[in-house]
Length: 431
Image (cartoon, rainbow, N blue to C red; front, side, top):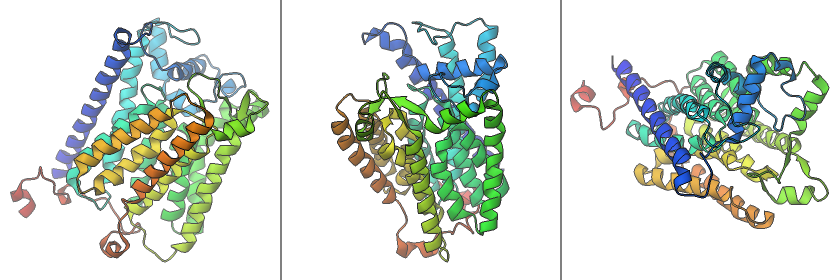
């Protein structure tokens, strides 16, 4: 019964945060025209670009999903998850603001409501991970609120629900590995990769440090590859070679309204408008793989606690802050949102740290949206990101206290009844 009460409490809290997101995003989006020189509502163009892809799927065009010239390189599971909303939009005869802008499209209100579902699922994944950490249970709501506030930046103003979905699935996979459910964790990791391939920066070190035995790692990788291949190969069927080239190169330009050139862009784009981001992202994956292998060898006889593992895997996501040739604000949200789980949970003053980390994260993403020279931009953003990574690493348990912490091979799901919080009556604790 206590488990069910705790589960209902978590669901209610996730619903509340999703409702807060919806109210705040609607207020900002619809009310900005009264305070700023904008015509109409503030919209997320990328969201409607993905809605266009969802309509393409509805029209039977899944085989040309990755064809060159679409304007961005989408991820098929993200568009597939928007198919119900696209069908609803078609049935209601809503006009969507893509590729031509509209000042007040009604479908945007429904779209924000639809995206709040993704945030609801993400909050549940955060609460699930936190129950598996050696941290006070009474702080889990501060942690979930902080993480949701930073993760929601992917949804509004940017309109990328696929990133939030990938983050949630990655955390669900983390929880399952803690519980020893390796098979289900592998499929969840594969689904996360199909939503956003760069979640591999989190999942690669997770698998290497959590799954014991090379044969089990290989089995985990094969299972994780099932869902990405199942959705990507049919999407490339119309023109496989051109689609593969588009996926691997992922060309971007710093001339887009929200893209900000970094030093990498300035050094490599001297004579070209477009720059291939694919090689930089491959480099990030190789770094994550190298670090994971090195730590696996170095710690082969050491029990790694869940908090340390979460910090290391989250640091992999921060590579985007340093190695992306063109930066967009929401690229930073995943590592900031994941970092909040351990940083706020381990703080002696969690409320202060929750507010401080939220302000720091939003400020850092604000810097990522600023218009300055590539040199000034990089020399400002990179130290801020590095300071954030160092702060998160500071939340790792001290070596002398690790003897009492649970190892990854032993860490299981603590039931709700074992988690005593300030909300639990003393009689129940004593009982």
